[in-house]
Image (cartoon, rainbow, N blue to C red; front, side, top):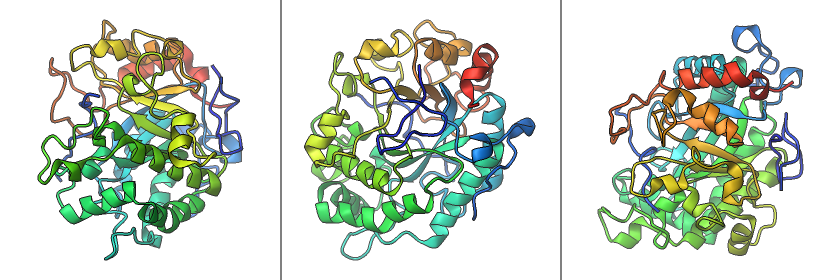
Amino acid sequence: MAGFTSSGGATAAGGSTSTGGVPATGGTSSTAGAAPGAGAAGAAGAPAAGGASGAVCHPKFASGVNVAWFKFASDIPGPQIPKFTELFKNVKAAGGSAVRWWFHTNGMFTPGYDGSGKAKPISSDNIADLKKILDAAHAEGVGVVISLWSFGMLDSGQTTDATVRANNKLLLENDTNRQAYIDNVLTPMVTALKGYPGLFAWEIFNEPEGMTSDNGGWTSNNCSGAAATCSTATVNLQKTVNWFTSAIHAADPAVLVTNGANNFSTLSPTHGKNLWSDSALTNAGSKANGTLDFYEVHYYNTYSGASANSPFLHPQSYWGLDKKVVIGEFWTDSTDGVAAADLYTNLYGNEYAGAWAWQYANVDGQPPADGAMTIWPAMQTPMNNLKSAHAADLTCP
């Protein structure tokens, strides 16, 4: 199992060439409520991720967690750096290299829209805040996966401002609005963070299937307005992923880009359909460089028949995919006959490229049926068990 490779034209640090709809439970509940530090020391005196080069580490297996936020949709402006630092220290000590963190999420705080519904230019303060988070990660020897948007951007329960929700929908459906976000926010942001230590990857969406009107979406189920205002056609999401990924690759050819699929039924061409394949994205958006560098998929055994989509019961090869796959959300609770303490080791043995448990800081509104704890330190023991068994594959030379 090789490391990660960017399709933007350069190999990611530590990598080598890769071999060629039901609501998820995680990812929906909110809790109330500078120059890069190149060469900074990592946890326990170890070199920071990527070593002397300052580049982030993309190891054979990317062990890690979802934070996924300390303040839902509003960690920026004003990120709580001491909390992020403690998070990064804990993840590194348990053998982790990646932390998945949500940025805009639902658009209630960033990016902001003008009177015509187009995204405003990203502020220098927002970029400085992003760098603070990445600096803190790099100092501890881990990288951040910046997840830009979530299905909640069309969910009236999460995006309670109807004007913001309408502008989010325009961003997904209107070429002019989509391009305005690229020109005013995405390209300047990616350019500012190009080659920045502490950046593991960009993620376009968390579970975009949830917003679909034609692929098992759920955001329209309890919409405060007309159902159509809380959903969109899959092709609009595919086009958005294609355009955003293309813009990221154009601004930073070496950086990795992914997308958080809800489950394997919308990712596997042999056991469902792959909504996020190279052909699906380029057919929708026509941009050849707008394809993903690795797949990310989520799994919760919380609905009838869920085990058919289980990464704990099937190896990566089972799904018929042409890219590496990270299991980007799952609870660290006994799952499909696998003990909680063995979940990370199981996913490693099934030849996935990484595992990021849900979630470090916040309790879900619908926790596991057995009442198991899912916040830190629930994932500490399974991460440490993987580290004890395969430490060399969790870091870079």
